[in-house]
Image 1: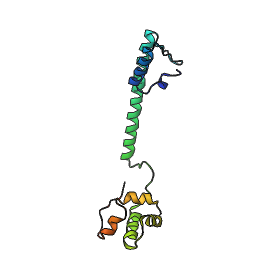
Image 2 (image 1 turned 120 degrees about the vertical axis):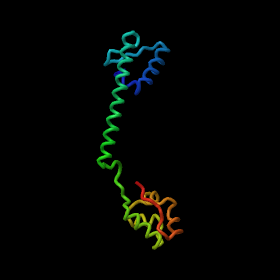
Image 3 (image 1 turned 90 degrees about the vertical axis):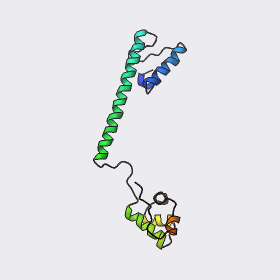
Image 4 (image 1 turned 45 degrees about the horizontal axis):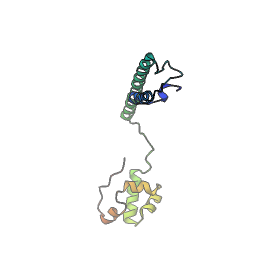
Length: 141
C-alpha cells in the first residue's frame, strides 16, 4: 500500500482490516512509512500512526465545525441564495387567492420555479383558496 491513510479512515477500521489480513497470514507493508505488520515493530508503528491519523482527523473536524459556527455568528449565510423573497411569496399568494392563478402560473409570474413555490406553500394552493383570511403559512428558511 502506498500510504496508511489509503487503507482505512478510522483506527477501528484500520485494525479491522489488518486483523482480516493477519487471519489469512497476509502482511501489510506501507511503501512510504516504516510499517510492516510481519514484524513486531511494524505492528507498533501501525497502531501509533493509526492513532495519530485519527487524532488529526478529529482536530480537523473540530476546527471546521468551530469555523462554521463562528461564520454563522457573524451572519454568514450558507447554501444557495433564497430566490423566493417574502414580497414575492406574498404576491404569489395574492395571485392565487384573488386572480385565481394556479401555483405553476403564480410561480412563473413571480419568477421562481413551481417547486420553489410549492415548498413555500404546504398543501399547495388549496389552503389559500379555502381560507380567505390571512393564513399562518410561514416563509421557509
